[in-house]
Length: 301
Ligand SMILES: C[S@@+](CC[C@H](N)C(=O)[O-])C[C@H]1O[C@@H](n2cnc3c(N)ncnc32)[C@H](O)[C@@H]1O
Image 1 (cartoon, protein in one colour):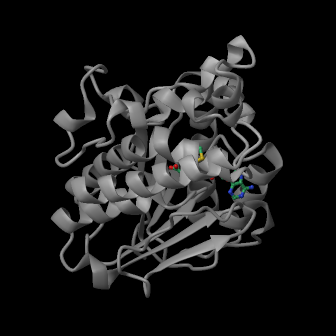
Image 2 (cartoon, helix red, strand yellow):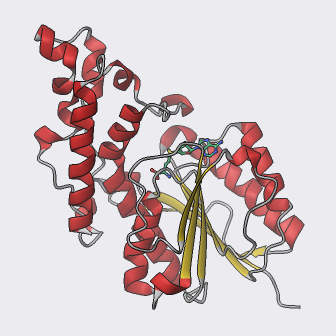
C-alpha cells in the first residue's frame, strides 16, 4: 500500500504542478469546500487533482477499513464478490477493496468484479492489473433504468450518496426497484461525509434499504442508526491502517498550493485574502472515517 500511495501521489502532484503552471491562476481552488452540502466542481481537471491530493490516501484508508470490516463479518461467502460503486470517482474504493481483499479473500483477483459509475471521466483510474474484472462507466446515474448486472452483492457509495441531486437519487431508487437481484445476500456500504450532510446521507441510506426490504423481500440485519467511526478521532491513519503513508513532504502537498499559482508567482503576493483558503492539509487522521454497513438477507424459498 505504501508504494502504491507514493507512486500515485507523485504522479498526481507532478500533474498538478504542470497544470497549475499553464493555468490562468488557481482561483477555483479558493472555493473548494463541502460546506453546507456544496460539492466542488469536479468537471475542472485541476479541481480533481487537488481533490486527489487532499483526499485520496485518507479515503482509501477508510475504504480499506470498511471492506475489511465487512469481510470480518463473514456475511458474504467471501468467495464471489461483485461490487457496484456509485459515484466512484477514479475508483479509490476499489483500491481500498483491493488491499483489504488481498488479505481477506482467497483468489479475489479471479473471483471478484468491480463496476464503478461516475458522471465524470476521472483520471488515475487503475484496475491494478485486473482489467478483465474492473469496469468504469462514465454515466449519469440519473440515466439508469435498472442496474446493469443482477449479481451484485456489494453496493457501495464512497462519499457519494449526498452528491446526487434529489431527482437523480429518486431515479436510482427506481432503477434498484426495477432490478431483479439474484444474490440472497447483499451488503450496502455507505461512507458518509462528515458533519453537514450526515443526516442527509443517513436518510438516503434508509430509503435505499427500504426499497430492498419492501420491493425485493430482503431483511436488514443492522439497526437503522448504526454506523462506524473511530473513538479517538485525532489518531493518525497510519496507526490503524498498515502501510498507510502520506509520503509527500509537506511543502509538496496542497498545504503550499498558493505558491504554485502563476499570479502569486508573478506578483509576489496573493490577489486577495481568500487565496490562502487553497492551502489545506491532506486528510491524515481518523476523524473522517465514517461509514455504515447494511447487511441485507433474503430467506431461501
Ligand atoms: C465526493 S465525490 C466521491 C468520489 C470518490 N468516490 C471518492 O471516494 O473519492 C462524489 C462523486 O459523485 C459523482 N456524481 C455526482 N453526481 C453524479 C451523477 N448524477 N451520476 C454519477 N456520478 C455522480 C461526482 O462526479 C463525484 O465523483
